[in-house]
Image 1: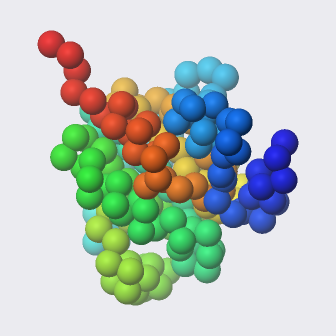
Image 2 (image 1 turned 90 degrees about the vertical axis):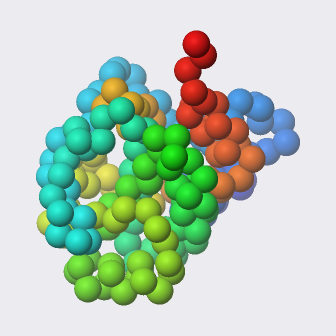
Length: 178
């Protein structure tokens, strides 16, 4: 394990790859796949505007679930990159869904207004969504495939808008060959 990776794992800094790391963007982003197919939990989600829905309503889209809090510095740092990806790929069926951990709607709305992020934000005031996915720290992200299954998780922040993140999403969201 490289020193940078060990520091990132302990302190929640961005995961970076060493020059000798694999060139596969999925590997470079240090994503953890699941040993078996898992369907995303169907816990109710409440958007900032009060609308309730479940992940099942987003089937057919690729959903990037990002668990965060306003007090989490690495969470705050990755927000602009996530917003850039959302703006770039939303027309191709990509949704960034930011799940706020146990904060008030007022605090979350204030943060969203200050930062100008455009992706959907949902509240998890009791931690039900976090418990369903066994979130133990922040930030943590999951990718839900078009079929509603969990594809991977990433503990800690990443350079999601960097070359590896964009290469991965570009390939993942490529239109099917006819």
